[in-house]
View (cartoon, rainbow, N blue to C red):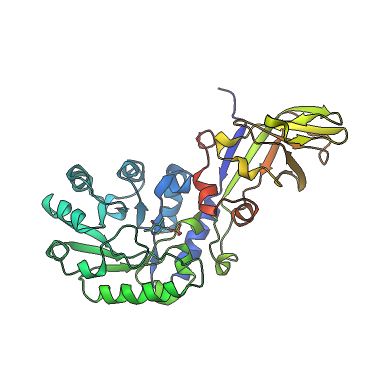
Amino acid sequence: MPPPSLRLVVDTDALAANWRALDALSGKARAGAAIKADCYGLGVATCLPALRDAGCAQFFVAHWSEVSAALAHAPPAQIAVLHGPIAAAEAAYARTVGVLPVINSLHQARVWNEAGGGACHLMVDTGINRIGIAPHEAGDPAIAALEIDLLMSHLASADEDSAMNASQLAAFREVAAQLAHQRLSLANSAGIALGPDYAFDVTRPGLALYGGVPRAELAGPIRQVARIEAAVIQRRRLAAGDSVGYNATFTATQPTEVAAVSLGYADGFLRCRGPGAAMMLNGAHLPILGKVSMDMVVIDCSAAPNLAPGDWLEVPFHLPDAAQQSVLSQYELLTTIGARLRR
Ligand SMILES: *Cc1c(COP(=O)(O)O)cnc(C)c1O
């Protein structure tokens, strides 16, 4: 098979360094890692071993379908399933393979207890109103029957200086005083930057591990992890008046050297990332012209006169900058990375 014309380069040294930095910022707490959505699009098989070898010993997936990929690289007791057991089959599966469910409701507590129970985690909702038991449900017999390892909650606005952070912290402390547990866990990436009060025993960074910067405090310690590169397919010269791409949204006002590049919205380079953006070659900016197609974009290569088919270009993927430049969040930029890039 010939080599691909598109590549995702994951810097596992930077990933490991980010985990160590977040672990250090967590103070006396240990940092775990959110590895859901295939490590936010960067690949569990690439990322999980690097995180594990750096010292991470607590991993969070969202779906039951994500468990087997994680099990290939980490012991089952270190894998938590955030969505929890909705059906008996999921509880039975957790007990068979030894991963721990996060219990998110009285229904899930009953499902787990009826399957035979055992160690699990418990999510308490302190204001995000997604999943998790309500604090007033903590006294329910189904909850009392649980063998709780991590007692968790999740911050809604940790990336902002919101009064909600302190109120969720207070609600979490209150519920923690009522329920027996092994360890407490509240902070995601942004929550780690809120300081030691939020760290408890285990922190749960995701975004910042993979190079995202949800709060300014993390801009220094966090390194870029993912780079995307795409090859030039073909060059052409536009005459004044020639247009580019679907719906002819760009028209050249003078003769212009352009190139088609092997990257499109099917690869996660969504149409909203085209306008105003540029590909890079050794520091030269090559602006994107017209609409992003499914499999290609066209760039103005005036700044790289010798650009030739097969040359590699850097796609803008410094997450804070790329998010600023588009309507997408840093989370969406990562998790929309397409399958052709993941090989
Ligand atoms: C995804 C997730 C995290 C990680 O959040 P980041 O903002 O990516 O650091 C932590 N905890 C829970 C419950 C999550 O769902």
